Image (cartoon, rainbow, N blue to C red):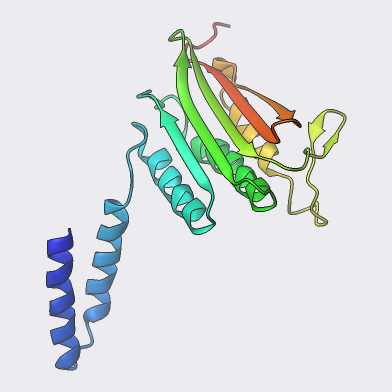
Amino acid sequence: MVHDFNKYCNYIDEKIAYGQKDVRDLTKKIKNKNKEFLIIEYTNNKALNILLSEKVRECNEKQIDFQIYAQSIDLAFIEESDIIAIFGNLIDNAIESCMISETKKIFLQIKTMNDKFLVINLENSADKEPATENGKLKTRKADKDTHGIGILSVKQALNNLKEHNGRLQWEYNADKRIFVATILISLQQKED
C-alpha cells in the first residue's frame, strides 16, 4: 500500500502540473483503499470490524485508551443493523463518559461462555455515577428528546434477538469509578 501510495502521489503531481482536472476520481479511489487498509479485523464480522476500527481511531484522537479483546465468534445470527446499534451506542456512551472523567479508559471484551452464550462486556471510566430513574439509565443532557435514546436502541436491538434471549445488565462501581455494561445472548435459539 505504501509503495502504491507513492506512485499515486507522483501520478497526481504530474496530472496537476499538466493542468488535468480528473484528479478527483483518483484521490477518491486512494481514500477508499486507505479506509480498507485501516480496518482491523477484531472479529469475523466485517460491519463490526469497520465500527470498532472507527471507534478506536476516534478514541486515539480523544486520547482515550481503548482496548479490545475479541474471541473468534460467528455473529452471523445478528443483523448488521443490530450489531451497529448495540456496539455503536455502548461505545459512544463510554466515550462520552471518558471525556468528562479524569482517567480515560475503555475495555471491550467479546467472548463466549461455556460455548452457550455470547458475552459482550464493556467497562469504561466514569467519574460520575450514571443518572437513573426507577432503575433505568437516563440522560443528563438538557435536550432529552434527541439524547438518551442510545440505551433504548441497544434494548430494541436485543429485542430483535428474542429467540436468543438477549439481555443487558449494568453496574457502577463508585470506588473504582467504572461503569460496566454486560450483554448476554444465547448462542442457541430458544424453542417455542
